[in-house]
Image 1: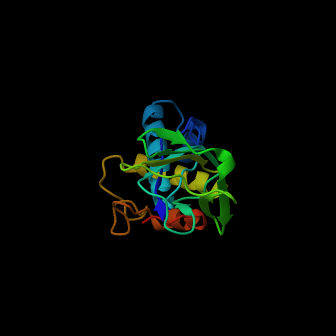
Image 2: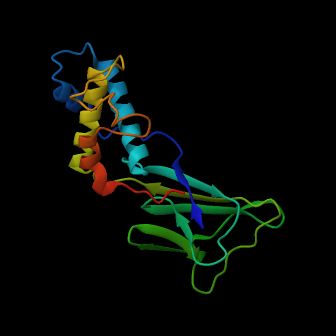
Length: 197
């Protein structure tokens, strides 16, 4: 059984600074600063969507309605730490699952949680709710991802009216909803996580 993990809020900081974005688009003044910041955030969000995981370390949450019938509860992205697991018990009360009773395993980048040795899954109520809070993201953002964010923000900056430029890859048939220019996909492909349902 897989639990889809999603960020609970925007990260505290962006992986690319305004100075890096200015350098990339060769901006000599601060006229475009607000737009550049927006393009940087948009680029990060689009890349995170394609990667299937957060870039900056942040809190993620998954919500489900059952424990798995067998094996562990598989989380949909690489996880740094499990912060809390709660469930609705037989009396309808939201209860924390004591961390000493939760075991975490990571093999091949897949994170699962399961009952620790000698424990079992807690009994759920008639209207069950299982919530897992965790942290995910890179402790140190790979330079290739930083470069990809700068490049994509640069594409967005150059094509702010959405007309498209065949030489940039923006607006052509290789891009669109859920797609990135080929050079950016190649830069970030090693970190793509596609364990989503």
